[in-house]
Image (spheres, rainbow, N blue to C red):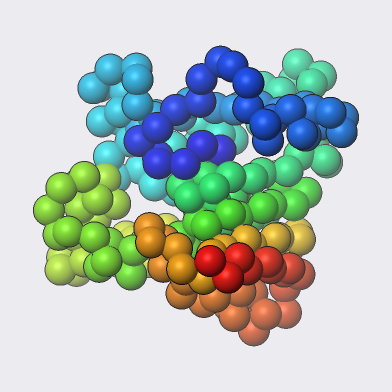
Length: 193
């Protein structure tokens, strides 16, 4: 799952995709609603849809790949970095039966603390929520994987950077702690820089 989410996957060489394909994996990259490059209306369709319709687009893609015989339902993994890492955690906590495992690289796990580190106005408050509005805080908590770690039933790998400037270190360490506290299978790898 691509990061951003205000970004998109493009046709062309991608070393991660080639690495996985070389090892026999079918790789499906989805430009879900909220992705850039498809017009303002498509991007705006992602407003307020973290762990909502943006995630539904990913699940629809899984169903398509299974129906087409491209993927084996019991062996589908979800992985991504930044927003993609968040989507992987959401997949493992909101639809744990869909994915055999997940890899979160540098993904946020708590939306409220994420928006607190961003400017109050702008794209984050519009797409994710405003931490000063109680209704938004309740919605962000519901859509934050850290608060649902007990729902994980499959292995998860969390990769993070100790000096990440965009996604605070605590986003990963608190998720790891929540998974360990719930007795869930988690492995982690930290880059010191």
